[in-house]
Length: 78
Length: 300
Image 1 (tube, each protein chain N blue to C red):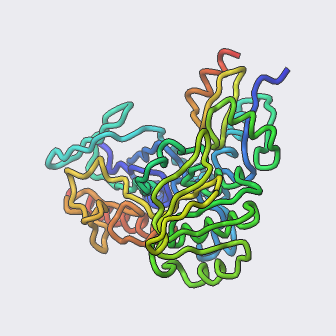
Image 2: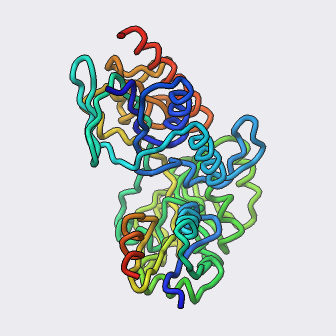
Image 3: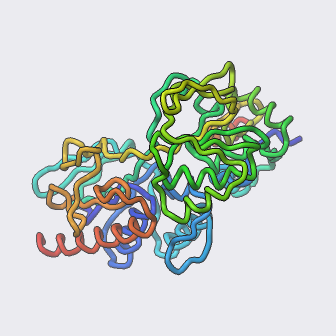
């Protein structure tokens, strides 16, 4: 089961960077377009306590923004 | 000992690095973020030779160009630059570099409104990056604060996403490029409020409105998104005690991109040109590197 969820918008440059980075590392993830999917938007606000993208949820660890070090650390624990 | 250390990897720093690589100089480029302003820009339509692109596409192209020239941007935060007389020490969070010259291309960051609620609701409806967070305001009413180019670009970007857009400027007229003003004035769901000060950002968990003072009258607007585009502040903290700055904190440079300290050059949005355009920053990055090379030839 995929344990990585990315909350993003289509135009956000840092969202693209995160998705490219996860693909580069061969990590499967589910992408939620929060510009259209209001349920996912609410879920993102609930999880991260904020309304900004990108947000990545790696098996329960919620990371706001493209923080490579935190992403790497959380992926190690997967 | 390095020939030069370039600090910053926006278009100014990357252009310096490109020229440094082609001159086979011994150098490094250090930055915490690759791409600079590209990473917050939507459409780019004014770079000579490129009809239309986006900031992120442009950044990708520059990354390819860096790779092609074997330039590797080191992910390091520069914390201090020391003038040692006939060389410099550039201190990063990972190591210390000794170098004969330095090119500062550290760019700028968004200016804040400094009103109640701004910090509390940052990323909770308040954003400084329209293309990043703007789509989150789909179907909502949004306020864009500012009256210059970036605010006008934000308005154009958000017009089809938001239900209604307010452009709130404290000036009596818009001050951006004419074509941006003309374009904004044709937007049907845009209301421009002149001589209007934003006084507070309101809400509970997320933004629910703003309080403004328009021509002396207090008013509340129900908006769920607030995009702040009121100019930028140069990232010059690391050199403020090293080189001369202007009254706004920009590094004073001459037309050769020389700073007040021989051996330190600067380029891009952190300098005193006060015109924030990709093509200017690229040109300045190029000039800074070529003049650095000439400086090195003279001191050696």
